[in-house]
Length: 161
Image (tube, rainbow, N blue to C red):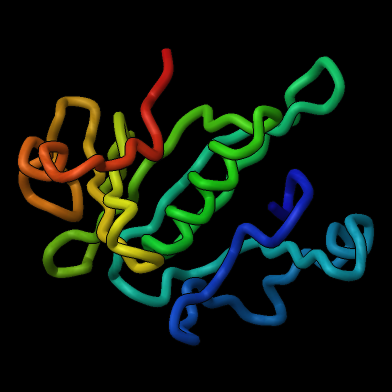
């Protein structure tokens, strides 16, 4: 993942734009220092009133952990990110939060996630269930218990203390 190595953390779905910025917002000196394939911005705007995911994560570098934060858009990106972390013992998620738009899309609120569930038999575009710290379902199937009772659901993420 960009920021801590390996493939880019930002990925669009269905050719839609997830973030919007303008040329004047680019932090050109930082981009030049980090390499020709890296772009840094002073500010970006959210293009759509849809959930975004803020992930604090780390990659093991020798005996230390290099920490980074990325912003994802879309459930397939969350699925890919969780699968990447779960397959690599040198990666870990420190905090996983969902940024939700209000009903009128005028403001946002953030909720830390306790768990993320998936159903592997549903394929690449399988629905995810996002469970907040108090057990509240924040997206996906409305009742966690019904989802978990399905044939072998997969726990993609759980918050570790």
